[in-house]
Amino acid sequence: MKIVVLSGGVGGARFLRGLRSAAAGSELTAIVNVGDDMWLTGLRICPDLDSIMYTLAGVNDEQRGWGRVGESERVSGELREYGVGWPWFTLGDLDLGTHIARTHYLRSGIPLSEATARLASRWDLGVRLLPATDDEAETQVVLADGGSLHFQEWWTRHRAALPTRAFVYPVGSSKPAPGVLEAIVSAHVILIAPSNPVVSIAPILAIPGIRDALSAARAPIVGVSPIISGAVVRGMADACLTAIGVATAADAIALHYGARSRGGLIDAWLVDETDAALTSAIEAAGIRASAVPLWMRDLPSSAALATAALAAAK
Image (cartoon, rainbow, N blue to C red; front, side):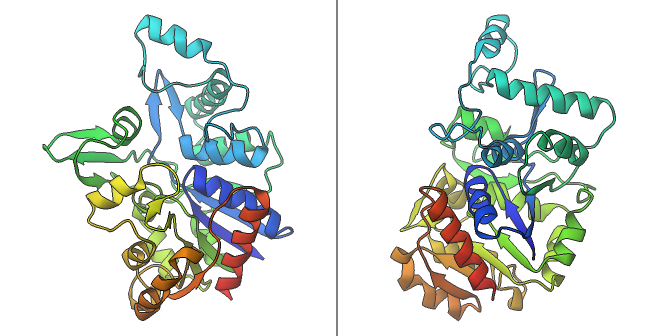
């Protein structure tokens, strides 16, 4: 079976780890957000691609939720002494090895998708990682006062606390990375990971051609709510949702994506058991809904969630 997952960072990484366990023997492809990417100290940083790669490789820091386990930060300390880079955005020494290798490939004329494949080949991930695009399309945040910031500055430095008016995905003439549209067309199941709808999934959908391919896909599209009992599981997705006028609720996000049968994106939606009362409103909007345990506390619970998502596709 060919399974495609639209994914952001930590939540998507954990979901993919569970899916790999639940769907052993299947061909798994993750189409990954690159709106969080940036140039920093001359290096190309791809946080979501790296979070997924490290998690699937088993070398991620489970306590912090990002970066490599057993990290040191001596280089970042030296850069701060030189006044270089963003002092509020710390890169670990092992993590810097990834960024240096990626930048070497890119400077050699190799596109991001191929650079990602070369980096991932170090480990047996069991999932093919595809950036949504090889082009640079860094999400910008439009502030309430009219100014704008790179997403990472708003998110990491200011902890999403600055009043925000909109998010801009400057995709321009960007094209889906090689293999992205082909994966969607040939998929038997398409899943939307429990990732931030505004800054993880929306930048993927903004790449010209991807939403159209999803609309025309023969495979069922099943989404997993990143919201449980009206609260974010991780991060500050509530600030993003508030900025675009969407309530922090599992049913509100389902309606934001919309039923594919009515011009939206999804065919089915999973909410947590505690949100079972919301399923009727979701189904009234033309989306099949199921209430299942969504907390991904460990590999078994993540695998159980992935199994439920595959069952919903049937």
